[in-house]
Length: 457
Image (cartoon, rainbow, N blue to C red; front, top):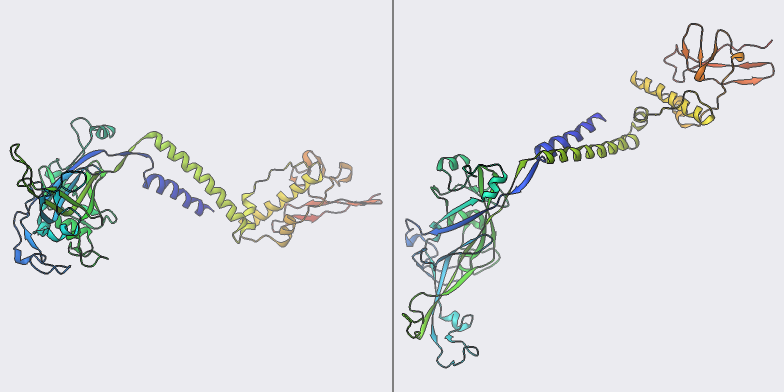
């Protein structure tokens, strides 16, 4: 019994309240995050890039172009959950001509071939962005002042962010981990004075199956490099002085279609539009950024609420434990001797009260025997289960000296020893017989011996 109760107490107060920190109030860590991408500092030789100028997974041969990421064509910063970054992996371009036969812009396409038609697909020229895996992504984020104030920070104190000193960040060790498995992580490529830097290769090898963009499980003849994909990067705080990045993948393809900025059919200096333009169709990696986590801080009211809840759970658990021990376990009969607490009147006035008194005395004798290492006798079990005997309390004239009638249904001898009355009187013509409770025989589970029977004169 005590082992079960102790286990429940340890679970409620040790695990739920202390280990899970139920005394803390969970507060969202609000903030903003942004990212930008830069091309590789040192390009991999073209001959060593497997997807350039060699048959690709669809059987075609594609050339590669220089990863110029700063022009706003091959990479773009956009809106997402709290911001986004687009990194191109494939560029398709097509030259469209103005449809001179179209006089109504609503009834016909002004530019041909039209996007989405077979002629458009046959005309476009596709190239891959060379060595895009070596491009670097710089992540920056900050926590809002309201959140810092909620955690008791002074105006001069702040959460750890990429704008903190390099020494502080190196000590905290921010990493990029899988959202689904926080044990699979990569260290930053570099810690700059204003940002944490990861390469595109680090992200794709961490989250993409087979650690390559040149495949797409379940889709033959295509790849993530050709179609594009979506990655979600979340900033999470485990304490005000420790944060990490958490990455997840979605197979949602992403592309961006735009008009080339020069020579595109747009008039220069307010002149007439040119008769042709170039469309740029870019597929690639979309990074959706979010600043989403919660931290707990101590609050006395939350601690009191957790303690009250724990006491309530303990009470329910104790009732369940008592029920199991009293009615399900093999030694349930012996356990009931200790767990039941009956307090009858020791001066029974009717048969019902006498029956209760007899039951209590029988249970106490059984409890005593158990504490002495003995088992309850069959007689005790019978006394606990069978209906009680109807007792008659003898009068003083019926008692043999030196006994006298004693208040509350007890007998007192001349040596002032008090004996529990447990008698059965049988009346006959000219004689009767008394039975007294024995106090000198502890091994007698019934606790009853016959006293001398006085004879009538």
